[in-house]
Image (cartoon, rainbow over the protein chains, first blue to last red):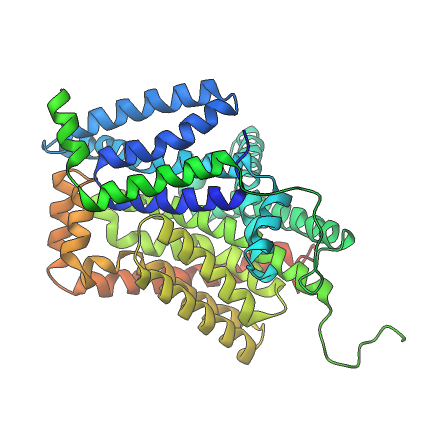
Length: 237
Length: 204
């Protein structure tokens, strides 16, 4: 099942604002959408792992947040807090990024008249987040082989050396990748002054309408009856 | 000599290169800023977290500044992306407008002063104002911010934040540490640029 990139953008914006501003029950309603959509993409394991970690963190946080847990406990609780509050947003963004191909995204952005000067760096940025982590991991392995760790005697003696050993190789490899990327882009005629054509077909279908109506319904319920879902939940439990 | 441009117009190939560089360095900057600001989750280190951002992000920023050709639009888009990322993470419109302003200012500095050490250094310090502004809502809209953190943090952390919000001095300290971090980071970055990037021809 394929959604239009514009619907995904709408979903991301609505889900983000609902998750950040509304009670927890609404964010559950909201991130159910990408979870179901991920099931359609056959990501069973991911969804299962996500839900078990999320439920554990949310449950633990609800019970521990009012207690005084000491200094170490504070770290644990704030980790739970970050997990339980960032994960719904993460799953929405993960779905949007995973399922959107770059050419579809560019075509959709061109259709809603976003200037190319914004979309080119944006697509590069989105594509680059995984690359940054991959490169950093590889460099970390290489440095560990040479005995340079985050907390070793050598790095404690000179904390700036860790910047030099980890950041400089990362920067060099990333600039190289970037140069190659821009050469490839220029070769294929990607330029802000020309109009691109695209073989990817994008358009609205039934599933787009369903997601749109669902999002609007959640937003409406959220603004008109802010306590409705919470009341229902408390009556059930 | 036939390919020397006489119109003064920059080619669109370098424009694509600039735009790709903005994307790459924005991704790197956002990742590094989040990683280095995460020491702020230890309550005693909240005030110092901005300093560590300035310290860590100086080297990538120096490289970014020295690689782009169109300073003002590139810095504007770069900071706009950072502001948008902060907006997605739950910061207000204030943060977004601050980032745009900082981007404009840093780009203007690079344009006026040029890509000498002084230009890169001062643009880097201006950039540190942007990452230091992450904590600004605690003072400008104290109640809302505390309410927002209360839903996600434990009582001890919120109490520490409320205590900080009582006086304006921690805010001054946050900006001061941010600028200090960028200053030290800038000096380190100058050495690193000379030692590594200029030698292998990545930067001029």
